[in-house]
Image 1 (cartoon, helix red, strand yellow):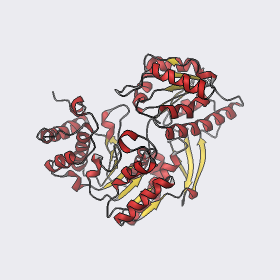
Image 2 (cartoon, rainbow, N blue to C red):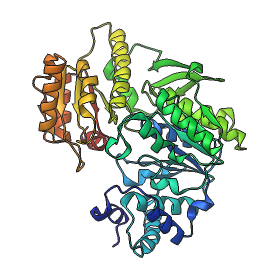
Image 3 (cartoon, one colour):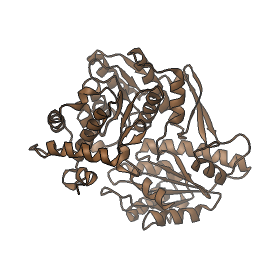
Image 4 (cartoon, rainbow, N blue to C red):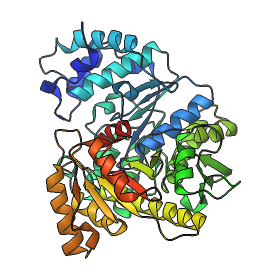
Length: 457
């Protein structure tokens, strides 16, 4: 029997090959399903997935049938293609993939894995009669397969940082040029307030396209701390229990942006109010284009948004956090949130700072030395893990980097003997033992580790 996931993930076409010719020809042969849809197109380095989650949740709360296309997935392939918060069904995935395969096999230059997946998503969204599709760029922007669409309702650019430098360039200016490649005439641009060199590129791209540019105004963003449960002080273990329960008492972060006061989000990272503000700024632009999105839909959508693997509390005794941060910017944001969590945990127990154990798994092509420099001073013990990915840095090699960076560069005595785990289950067991019931385990470095760690828990 035909397996659509095995077909899309066929190793022969897994490599990244930027360019739009293959996807254009494939979609032309499929009857151009993108022409029957309207889009919000989202690029960026950090926060674009969370921004997409907020936008899709808000649009759904406003009553629009909303498609969401993101990558990578954490636990199930079908997560990448959603309509109104529901993953594509096995039957719909099979039907759409068979249609795409028929046309893909007729091409001289076979589409890549990502191009096949994107085509399947467009076929499914068109069949589902989506009012709007929130579309996350896969890699870069200018030559990413998603850029085959015509002018969207809004082009959104999340925070830009150094990542995928071998493909996109090793300066913010070069990377910003690739991200800003999604800007098209007739589509307003909404941007995170970037570093000056990246902002200059986006401003120039919008001006050359004749588009209006809106920038999220963080001077009007007021961020509160995570609210656990005001009824009683909570230990770290109690907090983990609440976090694992989606019912009343689950933690949330409070913030305000512009006229929207006292918003709440279940996404706990210190950076999440900024991502939500970018989504709200996009809503303001969509309203100007005639989309009916009431204030209450904004409030409800922000509160209901979910984006797993981003400072997600997944266990207790000890508190266990997974975070998909995979570049230096993400590592520094993780440390900021961790500081807040540790301070709050210590205050609630009137005790010293809890013991922190890092489980680290990274891909070899990432700037993991800079990531280690950000997190190693915060840890009391370290567990090295090999992510489930062909590009993974082996755990023993990572352990050597932890020892060298921590001991020789940072003077971190805890970095002398990092534990080299055999697999995710071994990593979880060792990390929990090292942390003790009152400690905190933070697993980070790659989204490709998150599913295995959650399964092991």
